[in-house]
Image 1 (tube, rainbow, N blue to C red):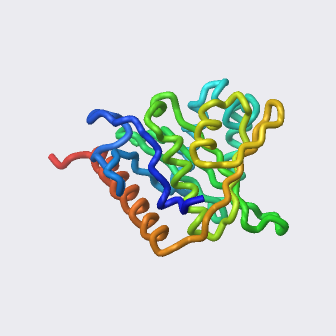
Image 2: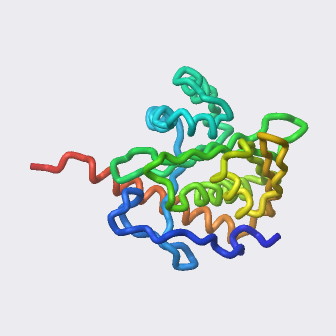
Image 3: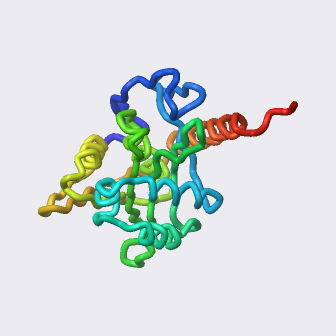
Amino acid sequence: MMPIHEQAPLAQPDLPPDADVQVLPYFNQQGQATVPIRAIGMEHVAELRAHFLALGEDDRYLRFGYAASDTQICVYINRIDFVRDEIFGVFSRKLELIAAAHIAISCDPARPSQAEIGVSVLQSGRGKGIGTRLFQRAAMFARNRGIETLTMQCLTQNAAMMRIARRAGMEVHVAGSETEACLKVPHHSVFSHLDEWVENATGQIDFAIKLGLHRPQPA
């Protein structure tokens, strides 16, 4: 398998200038328009909660494997370890968290170099390749943290996640209604750390611009 930073870029639809997912066009090293992604922490718990609560019943079923209630979603968020795990998000121009990826790093001594990813995208953000971008960002994070295996559990009927898994070159194991996908993450390199630095900077700048648009203007 080729290193992630050397893999051929996945095809993504062009984003219209007025798309609600970004303020300034950002182009990756291959010259493709792409979506800025920002690492988020405890300071964005309210936005994270609003994101999951905005998911419809069917989407909750696909994301969590069951039709999670509002209470169960709040319990899930309260159990996130923001020190050990990593959360990535995509904010709209209105600062709505329209997509999120949770990378849960294993605390099992028998699996110290493994992490699991879960991805969710609101209806307003679909069809723009955001889910794929979040997975690529998660894989970059895992690579540079020495994580050797990135897994994803999903329902077999979750066609969107199945496509992401196969495009990413994951080994997909279907067992009836449930599917487990596994990606062997390559070792980090100077280039992978540089790629992540650029991703972090782009996400921070994008969020700062959107935040500035919502600040009251001086009289």
